[in-house]
Length: 144
Length: 162
Image 1 (spheres, each protein chain N blue to C red):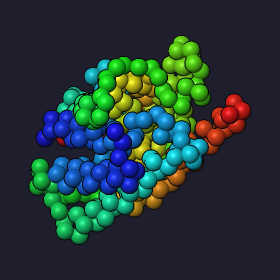
Image 2 (cartoon, rainbow over the protein chains, first blue to last red; image 1 turned 45 degrees about the horizontal axis):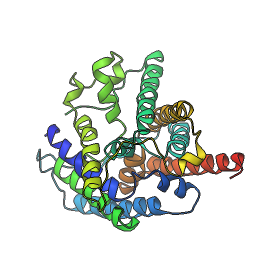
Image 3 (cartoon, rainbow over the protein chains, first blue to last red; image 1 turned 180 degrees about the horizontal axis):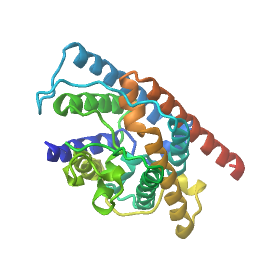
């Protein structure tokens, strides 16, 4: 099942590119209100996904892979969320990419994102190191 | 070739539902970066329930992204694939010399990576999946993502006198 996610990644990378999320200009134009392409992408994505999630919930759908009941649990509120979201926005505006689109941009030969991606790894590590210094041991995510 | 925004969004939204229905996992990109660090770090943050990061769907998902965008570029009219460090309009905003520009992008990446982990997700996990789930913390995160990105770029343009 986990290997099938390379196919999911290919599909999502294709969509990101077609949606204009792999074009640097679309980020700067969004933040300067010159062209709201990416705002329309996110707005209609949320609308469609929101309706779809409700349908899956009402139908009590099960995952096709595992047969397990689908879960609809959102991410928790944390004290870190506020500052984290502000920091994320700064990086988002500064680099003209986000963690997903930066990786997708590599496939289009936009090599400047190599520096951004290296930075994301270091930022992720800094968070883990801070957790370690504070004696916390929550894993980043769980594998299958 | 870029689709109109609404169509791109419909594609993204449909994708989210398909992935969730098929696999039981909601879309979320940024924590996949953890799975690449796992083999090289003993910090508990990177140790998953089952040790061995290559055992995560998130890692394979991230590896698929550049293949998908390559196919998208390849199937666009007038396809030409050549590696470039050009960043379009960002080249007016960022330092033009590569040895300053790349460190600036690196710092932007550090801030974004740290911020994503502190916030618990990025554009996909909070702004798309989270809002689709009507999850209040995700609304807060997504609004702050936008407000902060907007504020930063506007401020930078103001300071640079553009």
